[in-house]
Amino acid sequence: MTLHVRSITACALALLVATSAVAATPSDDTLPMAAGVAAKLACSGVFVAGRPLPDVVSKDIERVSSLTRDINYDLDAANNTITATKQGVTRSALYRPGLGCTLLVDTDIDTLNKQVADTVFPAPSPRTGAWPAGDEVDLAKLPPEIDQAALRQAIDGAFADDTPEKGIDTRAMVVVYDGKIVAERYAPGYGRDTRFLGWSASKSVLASLVGTLVTDGKLKLDDRAPVAEWQDHGDPRREITIAQLLQMSSGLAFNEPYVPGADSIVMLFQKGDMAAFAAAKPLANKAGAAWSYSSGTSNILARIVLQSVGGTPVAMQNYARQRLFGPTGMQSAVFEPDATGALVGSSYLYATARDWARFGLLYVNNGRIGGGRAILSPAWVAFAQKHAPADPRGRYGAQFWLNGLANADSSARQLPDLPADLYAARGHNHQAIAIIPSRKVVIVRLGWTSDSAKFDENRHFGAILAAIHSSRT
Image 1 (cartoon, rainbow, N blue to C red):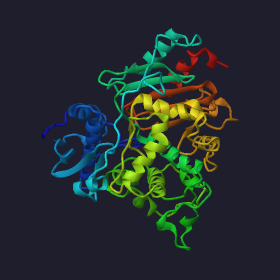
Image 2: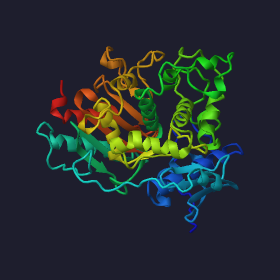
Image 3: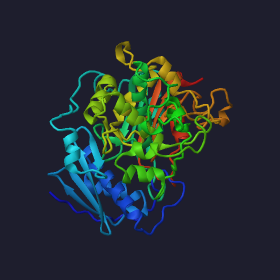
Image 4: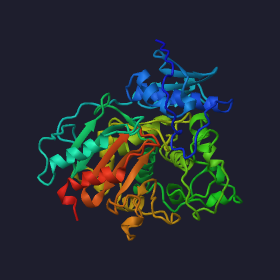
């Protein structure tokens, strides 16, 4: 089947997490990027999230940038591909069951399919019993310390959208208290089985896979990062440690702002081997001397994980399922790889809102799941939420965002009205999995918020906490 869809939306938003405007007029340089963005998001939106193509185009892709309008889409169900064409420039993405979508950049369909030949990854299965081990949730029976009316009002507020362009666009909210879901709501068109893109919240899950290897003694945080490109004795990058990669303090020169031509965009939409692209960057600072947010370092870490667990896409996917997703109950998780089979650790994890909540609960429980089984060591969990020494504001840990220095005045916190121990997996369009150990709370918010609209996490999450009486200090 082939489906053609023409672009129709008129709103122009910044590309991904851009802080500067994207050029409105496409050029030869921007056309491949625009087609790549469109093909990748369309493929994952349809095959992974299970949404209609016109819905993905109008609600997601066309809101990325003016460049991602006026694009033709061909959906080939026989080959599991979607091709996007803009002014004669085409890009395609291939869907493989269990792996999600991969752009056909520096590769082809046959090569990607051969990577997983005769491999069938398990599909999610129905589970009985109470969440999180099962899928049964009873919102009619909440703990007595929950002010149900206040909690409903707080959730309503998180979905409210009075912006002219309807740019808040909250699509899912899940609140966990004391190991149980106490609030859950979805926007029309989405539900408990919808997989949501985490964008950079994926980094925290990638870090957790690193954490399993550290917990098992297969990697050490202070060891030099095993990156082949850096092993010459005269190469100063040879001194970069795994901890420095995790804490965004590698010193590598990587241009993160999401505008055409930036390293992040070239890496995600124009390179088949993302880790190699990032690893080729020179040092801009001495390792450990400066903090600089870099999606490239996350994908270098993803390749380290790949090589540590067997070096093949099948081995990587099996490891993620067996060591993290299976034990935590994240059955819906689809962590998409690049053309080499390494996970796109910076950006491409899809999971249901409930499974994102299961991920947060793992950290609230100090690395343990039901029955007390340790998935991550307490030492790893402590490291994940310890601020990077090179970050003077204390707002970044090991691929997690922090609420600032714990001993600082609340005004110095990123979210001044929320507890100092809050830390979060966060991604573009304001994906947030907030972990608050002192309150036994996880708050999941997923959506497609424009940069101009701004979802007020401090206000909305504060209202949710206020409805849980035991959380008040």
